Image 1 (cartoon, rainbow, N blue to C red):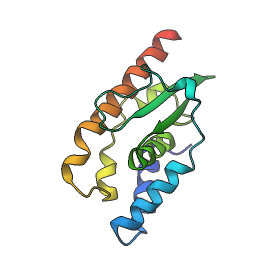
Image 2 (image 1 turned 45 degrees about the vertical axis):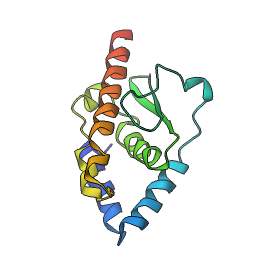
Image 3 (image 1 turned 90 degrees about the vertical axis):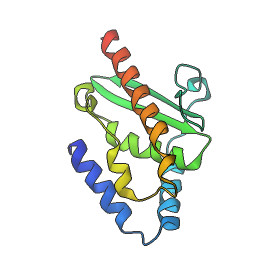
Length: 139
């Protein structure tokens, strides 16, 4: 399996193929739409990310030591970013994602306004780390 850094670089190169922000957004929307549908029973207060302007749910689970992430959002942009997060997390072990950052997203050049990302991405990382801690305590 590729490292998280290798996967981040792969995503950056994927987005560099698109000439403008609109085509990057179209690609991001497609990634979000291609996610498997999240079971509605998983959309609850425990999986809702606090601090995101849009509604974003994600549920982290572990099977045989490997992580699985289910994501959904009412925002196409956030759902697309969730799809990127799934690519980074899916199939990894908890210790691999303990230092995960989403700084690489700035290199995708998808933000129309600089302030759009700050609090939302921090909230996503915080939520992911809390779910990771909960899984660690369970095992």
